[in-house]
Image (cartoon, rainbow, N blue to C red; front, side):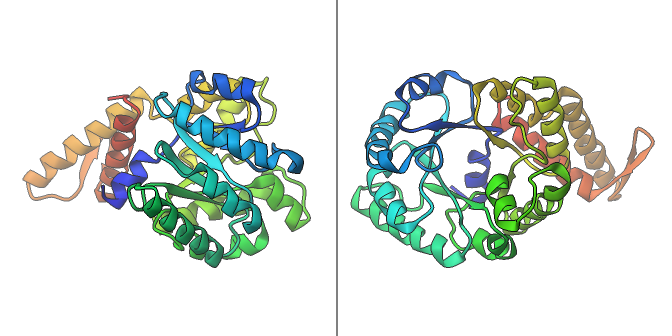
Length: 297
């Protein structure tokens, strides 16, 4: 599988967090329609229950492997907890690992090396389990490009808004977080990764229309999906981050029009009164690739 195919396969519109130690939530997770389920070993699990959560998480990955959603795990941030997390959870069926507080490239590289050893010991495909580093501090923000390229396992990049705002000493609102979130898109794209997130909080999960608008705006800014903590948001994210029928039709028209122009020796053409050329074709091809990924064409 090529790097591009890796990143295409590991592109998720909705990533639903589920506490790994909550059996009731875990039991229903594969029925929620999310592109990916993130079994959480970090913030939603108290320190007193980390060991139990690891054991349950390992069992859950094995049980979820045949479900419709990909299975991911958010491990703990500190290396003393992260390494035991990896020892427990690495197995067939685990698609990717979210790396919280991935503020230094050497930390990502160390976790990747640990994963190399575990995959080899357990007979897994080398490099098969992917990473999504989470930028959660100003230090991580300024090292985002290096963090994004620290391991070939990385397929996405995510800004942890609450942690980032706390470390930066600011309120986490759309105005204060717009710059770091947009910069994250640039860092991800520079490294060939998928940017995840929203431009403002979707904590008000009862207001689905507002969340849909928030997610659609994030898609315009270049994000391809987002995490969420409530299953009610899953269909909203799936819709907002999916190419619409009009977008798909336009993308096909762009490609067909430019193909005709190329046959006539021209690199540009006019479609619906607007000039189109190579960048528009590239965007159209990317959109159709995503549409195929999610079974929309």
